[in-house]
Amino acid sequence: MKNVKFWNKNIHRIIICTGLILLIPLIAMQFTDEVKWGVEDFLAIGILLIGSGVIYELISRQLKNRTHRIILGIAWVIGIILIWVELAVGIFD
Image (cartoon, rainbow, N blue to C red; front, side):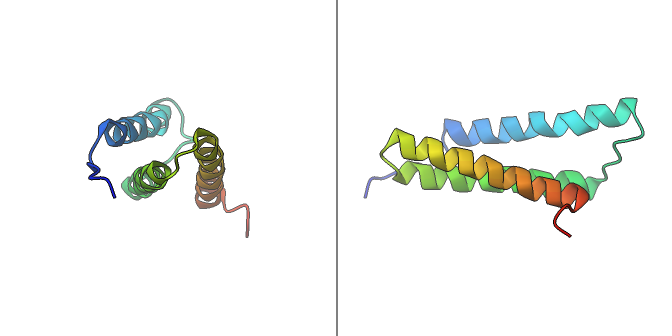
């Protein structure tokens, strides 16, 4: 097995993208009362995004075929969106 560095540019990108995504509700909270997030909401979504991004990165490193990585990425994003929607409004209750 190759000696693979865990902390690479993709991990930095995951953290930066998570921060940018979390800026959306933070900015929205300044302009409307419709968005009411607390610290626990930002923490939960931050953990969800960073955790899933790192897990995807680790799994996709094992896949040699680019098509398989793309399919995995699409499925992963759909799964994360479903989890986020469930946490936000509880559509599966």
